[in-house]
Length: 134
Image (cartoon, rainbow, N blue to C red; front, side, top):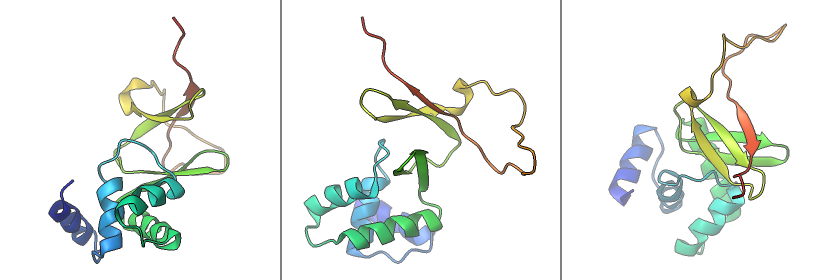
């Protein structure tokens, strides 16, 4: 994503663009991966060596708050960020740990999920699996 497009996207979401925010946005808004905050920091640091870990964490949290990203805890102790906001599911490769998007319609769900004592606001299916060996 070009710098102007990132700046426009940030402004559309009420975020004042700074060099650090634009750098995080350039990576996060064009990635197909589901990076952790530390992975984002490592990537952004290559292009902006002075960026601090705290700045990246704060920027990611701001992007989540403003609706640019989703923050997901797909497995215990692992929080990742997802730029894909439309409804979809996830598959975690049990061999590599890679997270793959699964189209919403690829999983058949019968009826709306219900949990006694709760109103379910949203849901997604998280699957684990591996590629079959030949």
